[in-house]
Image (cartoon, rainbow, N blue to C red; front, side, top):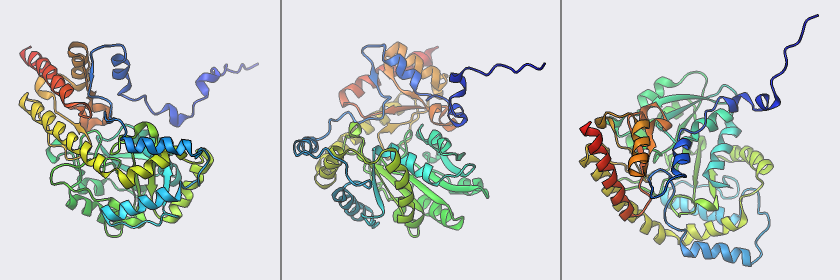
Length: 399
């Protein structure tokens, strides 16, 4: 009599294959080590060091005092959607119907998840630049999509090459995914590159996901343009953003997405069945942020710019080649001059000098010779971090 092989334990069978296939974050192990140490200067976490501005906090407190503790519309409060529509039209010249084309989400992270799950069918290919934010690949895979990587290069300031994008298109390509200004590199897309990517999207009838969470953090002569504001792009772009970075509201978990009404209606189905609504208090605070918070944004932006120039100059002076990041709050120095790979560089820097950076390979193969350093910490701590890194680099170069 044939015997049946015993089934593996339930715990081994419970997870879906698409979850098993996604490795844990390459960043996590460094933060596990960091949590056990003292006197560490962390340049690792991509979070503003500023507290949420007082007027925004007071709006949240007042919301609670006024008893605004109930559900809102699944789309979000109409007041916030109207203010967001006015903001996008004023800054970028793209007009959205607040009643049908805007959705308030639990952070830009939910916006990303919703956009992909609502539009990706199994096997759909999504072209994604790398290095890129660590959540993009898992989000595409969780939605059933297939990631097609297009590498970016230090020599091009990590801007996406339109010719490489077009070469990656196949009959299965559904969409192009853009995350600019870019985490981890701080790169931006020049206007000419954006324009050509728009033409490629139109020529090949592609959907475009554009995560623009760092849109307000732009430096020097660079002026950000919303991808949906380009000719012909509004009807094929899902634009995503949020309040976490520009307004120092990470813990409030408030974001948004914008797109054609028919697509937003489909996205809403997932949102209403899984989340229902973004927190009411956070929406009320975000309304004050977007209508009254511009002076605070400008103040924080000026300080980020001051830190940016310090960090980039110091890295270059110590022989760690760093291109000029024009957006977000990251520098992405190349560490090959030390003779160390990025993982070893990051681990030893943390152990020997108590400075935390993130190995660039965590964001894609093109980042393998780099580390990510976030300059969203005080100028004084950045000065000390740079001094420690310089000591470490000098020792590495001497061996």
